[in-house]
Amino acid sequence: MTNRYIATPIMHRVVEHNGLIFVGGTTCDDESLDMAGQTREILAKIDRYLAEAGSDKARLLSATVFITDMNLKPQMDAVWKEWLPQESFPTRATVGVADLGGDTLIEIVVTAYK
Image (cartoon, rainbow, N blue to C red; front, top):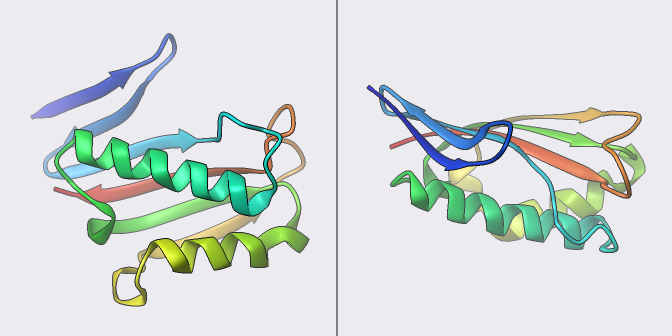
């Protein structure tokens, strides 16, 4: 069975299928924030999105993080470690990209289970 949550004009933010929860690329709303601030805002959104589908961050399986400046990765990592205890870390890849649009510094995609 497939459930879809939080429709936008082009996608659903969250899709659940066979107990897996896929959260699409999530960015911040306030692009004036630095890397740490943008990361915090995104992780708060991910908390809400996972809750909408009946899951939480302790059930993360994987994450892909796209950032525009690899020199800012330590700021992102610090917020990530504040948000999630080490025993709940999913697999993760951090990918440097040229541009995410506007002043967006980071975009995060996650998969969790129910």
